[in-house]
Length: 219
Image (cartoon, rainbow, N blue to C red):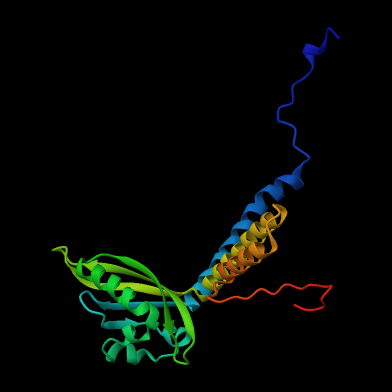
């Protein structure tokens, strides 16, 4: 009406009735933050259970400190690491030893940080993978004073990676064999191709593929 402009204006703003959603908005992030912190803490605890913290000479492979977790991960007492010369070198898998020691020694010579992944033998002769990170601690003159680092056991991750690689090779071989069969390749040529692809997919040196002939009831 013509008198609408004379309506009184409330002195205080109207209160919202949507109180429950507002409380949810305030509390949900806090809950998520708490859960995220707990999740990260659990992951850190798991990582530390498989992590060996160490300190060593800046110029040699002699260790001056090794955390107690080394006994859980590799099975050798801490004292052996600290007292036996070249103890770490002798633990490295024979197939990885030469290049691992060479790369680490080169980094030591140039006072550089490094990260290596290699296999080690545990006290009960099991093979485990380690990711070894080393950081050079320098003095004021810039020369390396000591090295500190951590070894993380990554065996499960390496096994999963290897299995995935095998699966991809097998899938590729299946596709290639299917393409050969559809293209009308001769039986003898297809069998030879099958042997080559199966050997490659399984990463074996020798392979034999048998053909079943139903009318002759033999392989």
